[in-house]
Image (cartoon, rainbow, N blue to C red; front, side):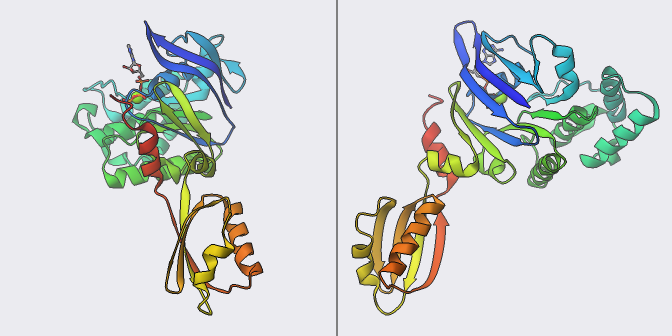
Length: 309
Ligand SMILES: Nc1ncnc2c1ncn2[C@@H]1O[C@H](COP(=O)(O)OP(=O)(O)OP(=O)(O)O)[C@@H](O)[C@H]1O
Ligand SMILES: [Mg+2]
């Protein structure tokens, strides 16, 4: 649905996005994660046709953004990271204004406005002035605006910034629901765990480069993630386990404590299957297994450490 080829965005000499290739299939919720200045907003603005790339191009549903920006604008809902406020406009006037810009009118527009206000939980503010909304409410209004013309593709630039925990949860749930009804969503955040639950795919950006992308499992593997297993061994045979597992390539570390073995393993289902197979083949009986995954946020911080400096 979104295809980016060799995209480079420059501001004078500064390269904000460097030769990025990316494909977001229809119906995918794709999370773009990276520290400040990584190039997330620049990439989204290029997809939305709001800036002219130095090189490369973007297509949405096969339509080139540079060649036919109007057609692309109809298909996408863009929620910018900053909200240009029209302080004295009322909430419903604001949504009506944007709906009309997209050629909507009359009762169908009114119905749609009610829907998006309900989805974003803003009904009680329908007749309030925008200037009097809290930051989180403005953020939700902005999301309502991005959805008013029922676009197939949503570009959400930090939709949860400045929103309280309850509101963040609601926004995550909303994005999840958008994915369920088949929308294609590209959403950015600084925080990996915030996206990992709701996204089908994740891309990690730093300094204009897309350094890793794929499913959460792919990313974990690419970041060198590991899992720590605590295995309870029966028949007092724990001492024999390190010998049995000697030379096993996916094993990073092993420690025996009484009847328990702590093994650090590559985060790959194949690795776990193979480990269990080896133990069973050696006649070792397993009483129980607990596992702990390396915190992805730690790995993400490692990957992007010091990039701000
Ligand atoms: N209008 C602009 N003029 C000049 N430089 C810009 C402009 N917009 C962005 N940049 C620069 O491009 C780089 C990428 O910025 P961008 O806003 O795309 O990053 P980001 O990942 O969205 O960051 P943040 O998490 O802070 O929103 C930064 O170095 C930034 O200073
Ligand atoms: Mg940004």
